[in-house]
Image 1 (cartoon, rainbow, N blue to C red):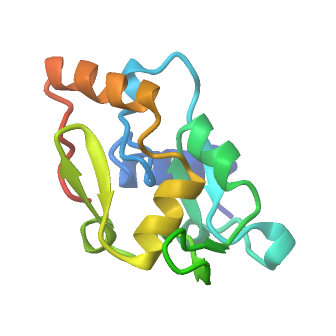
Image 2: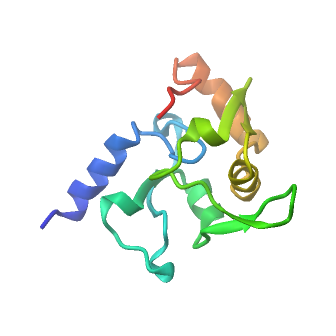
Length: 138
């Protein structure tokens, strides 16, 4: 049986120490990143690595226990971005320091997780100073 510490290390390393939603690097953050259940336990998710993501506190709190949210353009419920099965570059791209959604999943996730909050943009600017922005495509 694998220890929780080993699972946490595996998830963190797989994510290259970046939030798997907003792509922020944890090294410049004052807060500790979290293990996040992509499919929450309240929706039948498990705590195996294939259902876990490395998430900054803001993304983790904004996502909460949701697996789908309304697309701001159509109003229809769509799945949130799932870092275990979705490619980040398939749903988002960078424009300067902003996350630009490319799909309904991207729009819904960007809105629900507030991916372009002014503080996040300032952090991305600071990351560039340390050669941490833009992040490599996961």
